[in-house]
Length: 427
Ligand SMILES: [Ca+2]
Ligand SMILES: [Ca+2]
Ligand SMILES: [Ca+2]
Image (cartoon, rainbow, N blue to C red; front, side):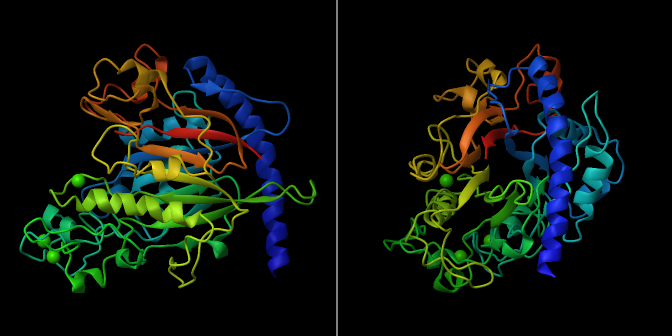
């Protein structure tokens, strides 16, 4: 049964690969002519595989609203998001802030009504493989986690979000979805939705500033249920290549997807900054041999990633190496990790163009999000060192570029307040 399944999967890979490489060449020449891609190099031989992370701002204020917006093909924001994806043409795409819909209908409508329709001359795009899973956002904890004196149980209010396992106005708001042109090995996916923060040795649990005690922002009863992941942490293995046409050519790459909490919307106890740090640490420990024995996944399997496995860490990690409110060293846990390939930093002409107006002290050409005059590097695609990075960029066209219309100046938001980030790796 398994071998028959694998054989079907492999046939699909061959078909997909042929289509993908032809489309890639055309689409990439097209975008390269339109706007600066940052760094774009290409060597002869197999087409590189493009990994992209995009906080697409497809969260809505009410449960079911995203499904309604996706029911027709005429929502202007969703069209702009779809066109960006078509222009960049990634092979593996993590979407953040895509409200969780367990039936998969929202993703299906997004593909059918938006990605399958070419926008303004861009080629349609299709991802045959999809992964999605529940998010801790908006799931009531039953406790007063924000310590405002009440346990809020009314969905749709900020007070409700503040007491949920992750901030959200309703269950699944700000979810994630992974789209892939390559098969997802569903039965080997690991998720860390339920892992408790207190079970991380040396967890940076926040302290109540009103008491002399350490780590007492959350009560013992709260710590007994408080999950570390504000959304979810996924290890999704993707099967690249084909071992029949190219013996030894198939390879598994683990997409490590997450969306740690922003380090803001808290007080002097910095509960969100500390949680953001430890959500990033989960991956740092996961890829460090001997450091992840304490970690258990949602099937209660312990341990981290094999020390020979290839991976790409992706997501809106809500941590800038220089600016912003994150804890010092939070993102350095990954950027400076010996297994992480940080050779090439994705950049953009549009990010460079806002340098004079931005409040940032760091180089804005690396930035991936802008909120008024504040801009930050928050979104990442970080491959393992055994993968050769041959290109990288942030989709952020500068004013004057014909595609600037897809991002605009931020007011109003055209597509998203974040930019798509991509990295090409050669296998
Ligand atoms: Ca409390
Ligand atoms: Ca509360
Ligand atoms: Ca904070």
